[in-house]
Image (cartoon, rainbow, N blue to C red; front, side, top):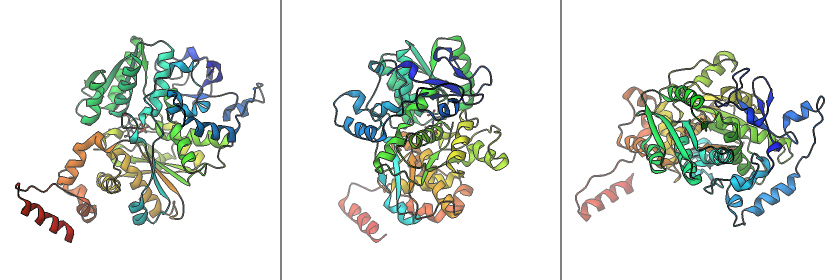
Amino acid sequence: MMQDVHQLRCTGCARVIALDALKENLRCPECGDLYEVEYPAWSVQSAADSATRPVKRNLPNPSALRWLWKERRTSTELKDQSGVWRFRDLLPILADESNIISLREGNTPLYELPRCAQATGVERLYAKHQGMNPTGSFKDAGMTAALSVAHERGFEWVACASTGNTSAAMAAYAARAGMRSLVLIPEGKIAWGKLSQALDYGALTCQLRTDFDGCVRVLSEVVRRAPVYLLNSVNPYRIEGQKTPALEIAEQLDWQVPDHLIVPGGNLANSSALGKAFLEMKHLGLTDRVPRVSIVQAEGANPLYRSMQANGGRELTAVEAHTRASAIRIGNPASWRKAVKVVEATGGWVEQATEAEIALAKAEIGAEGIGCEPASAVTLVGLKKLLAAGRIDPSESVVLLLTGHTLKDSDYTIQYHRGDLLREEELAPLRPEIEITRRNTVELDADPDQVLRALEKAGRQ
Ligand code: F0G
């Protein structure tokens, strides 16, 4: 992998910068927007540039790549066993492959969802479960990429502000690399599972008396004043790693892309990454079309949804975010412009989900024997709404992107089944649907007769 194979282009003003000219906050000093990695030999943008600037075209051969990526799964080398670096030909961001820091991330399952398929009428319904990654969330795919870059560039410290999953992933990969990590999290607002991971992996974990958006503001000042490498999803190398689930989905469906991909929206990097991947795959001739990428936000943390309704995504007004799906409790998403571009380029939509809709959808995904964390369940809500609006036809194929493992936030699940999660007014519109999915524990004496009676009662239900 050669360092000059890739370049960084501002997604706002389109300026290309030298790789070492990237500022600590990873934003363009001219317009403040985010950078995107592009590969002049084959990137979409370079085709447009080639009129003014001669570009060496070196498009990879799609069939050779498909064969190579499959072949690597049988290799015993770490970089081949990783579901991210197995696709390294589409993310040549390192100068030296020996700098790869990997926990054998990726290669996650694409599950069928037979019960949800029956309930919604969508026969070809799948869940790409990114919660089946080493730290239990989709963040690992981006983290192996960006942390390997940090390692290659000689940083000792890496840092992020997080609603929990990014911090868990960053702390794990930093520990693996023998690096130090600084985590800023909003006090009392992240799930215990995620906090416990950051502690176990040895991060310096600071709980700030603010929300996620406040943590981001503090961290932008910290990175300006201390030599720490920023690993939030504004980091363009995170996006390169987060492209790989899209490659896996295409591979798992035998290179037939689905009609729709539905993704939860928080800071809006994941939707951007998956959209980038599908557009690049089509450009390179690996696939012949792109899925419609739709994004679903929690109703209480819906700045993109509001922006699409109000002005078609031209401007975004930050909101104060409130949702029990704490992973996506974000009011001022950094990558919103990138996400709008993906929705527009692929013909997708932006939807929102209420607290009761999220809770019910999470229980329905759980009942498939899969489970996910609350933020991931917004995807099933989005599917139901897009079907009701006639935007998805039941004959089409749909992939829901599940971002986190159900064990990340077991408090939420237990409260749901106990009936303690939702307030009366939240529950009211979905009470019957929710009641039949609830499975609270049954308290009994240590008596076989009592257990047998419980068994008999359950058998009648
Ligand atoms: N789902 C889960 C489980 C998440 O942890 C996140 C984001 C998202 C969805 C939204 O993805 O931000 O790319 O739109 N979690 C971040 C974090 C913000 O700090 O862990 P996005």
